[in-house]
Length: 128
Image 1 (cartoon, rainbow, N blue to C red):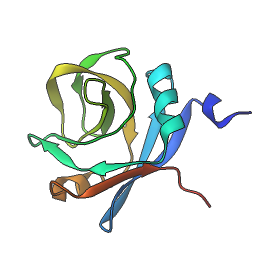
Image 2: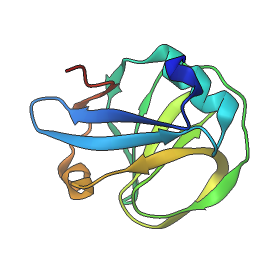
Image 3: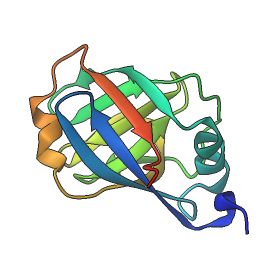
């Protein structure tokens, strides 16, 4: 069975040299977008902050909007198609542009609150 057919994919969001946070991409939320991101893993980019509620990094992933939402809860992971950015919500937020929901962060979400602009974020599959 292909690894792309599973409904949930466990990944690691690493703040380089600072912290690791478990991250689940959930195919049922947005099948096309999650599939595109999974084929692009590992991903890496410089952290950016959007207010006090969103940490994100830009990627080269190109996927249109799917099952768009503007309200997200702490721990949600979303894809902003206009910039190819993967966004991590560090608190509940309503965002002006619609985003594609793609997953959830596990424990240790608060490590994202200490992030500095320019820190390197890596999203990858942990290999045993």
